[in-house]
Amino acid sequence: QDSDFRNAEILKVCFDEIERCRPFFVLLAGDRYGWIPSSKEYLRSLSLISGDRRKGLPEDVDGNSVTAMEVIYGALQDKEHLDDSLFFFRNADYSLIDPETRKLYVEEDEINSECIKSLKSRIVEMCDKNACRENVHEYDAGGWDGNKKVFTDLSDFGNQVYDSLLAKIKSKL
Image 1 (cartoon, rainbow, N blue to C red):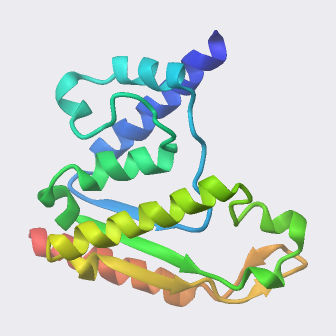
Image 2 (cartoon, rainbow, N blue to C red; image 1 turned 180 degrees about the vertical axis):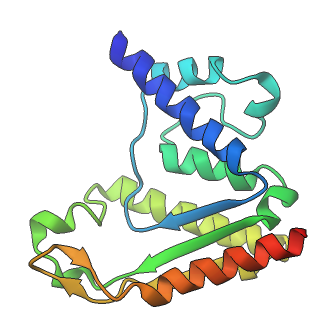
């Protein structure tokens, strides 16, 4: 089907963009696990990726979201990629957000909610094991503007990302 092919292309574009940004990888993670492609879409996308670039990716989708696969591909394949990666996990008070809008920020599905927690834990464990725990950051989402339906006061977070990435870049010079 056309949608299967388009979705396979989307996955390939995600992996291509990670390659384009090497050696760096930055994850901004909230509390949603993300889109989980069908097995057919995933296998089709793998067929579009050369063999050496498939290293570390699961043979089948196995319930992995695109976000999880991007993390595996971009950061968790080996220590070198992990060292050049930055991870930012959002802390937010979602009780301030109306229930309908909250769905955009918080996983409603219990299994997927556990999956995003598990992914974050896996990242922390890998960084602890590989002596690069300083690559993992948490940030406060700031306030909530109920009229505009957006988080506010994100300048500290922006500075944190900027400073961390700049330090990574300078370490490569």
